[in-house]
Length: 108
Image 1 (cartoon, rainbow, N blue to C red):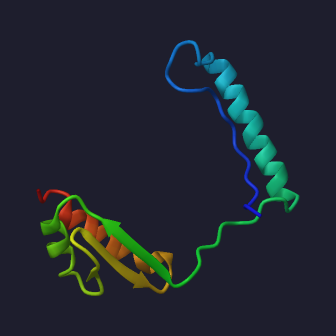
Image 2 (image 1 turned 45 degrees about the horizontal axis):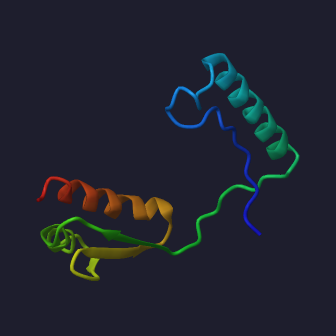
């Protein structure tokens, strides 16, 4: 069973025919937020829990990006353009993810 969620859809797309007036959009968002708050307080929405350990795999654009990313401790080369790593939890996964993104974003 999928987790229960609460959300509001203020409009559909960017076409003028599908858009709604900003006041209508704000009202829909406000109503969705109120419904979400009621459901959370009533126990109808459980907090999202990341399963541990956390495994992240990244498909990069170029093989040289994967070459460089594989130099980061704990990051392994999985394919021509794919790297991955495992971390104990989400917070621990953030640092190697950010490092991989940061050092590979400008390589072409």
